[in-house]
Image (tube, rainbow, N blue to C red; front, top):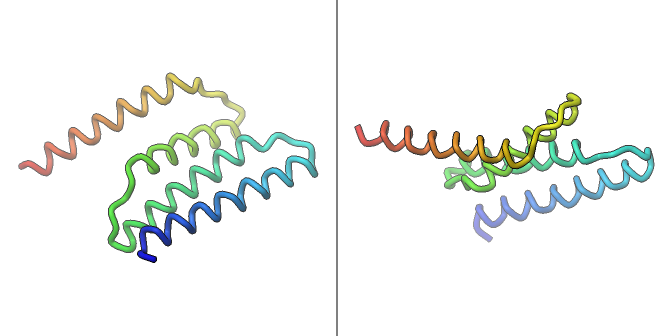
Length: 109
C-alpha cells in the first residue's frame, strides 16, 4: 500500500470513528452534534492534507476545500452563528480561484 492510499485509509477510519462517537454522544446526552461533526470532519480533512505534504505528497485541493468549509461551519456553529451555506461556499470558491490565479502569477515570474 503506498503512502497516499494509507493516509486516505487512515483519514476514512478516523472519520468513521468520529461519526460513531458523535452519534453515541448525541444519543447519550441528547444534544445536537452537527457542529462537532463538521468541526471534526474539517480537522480530519485538513490534517490529511498536512500529512500528505509532510510525506512529500501532493495535497488534494478538493479535500482541503471541503475541510476548510466544514471547519468554518463547525466553528461558527459552536460560536452560535449560522452562516448561509450556499453564499459562503460561493465566497470560498471565489477566494480559492483568486488564490490559484495569484499563485500562478507569482510562479510565472
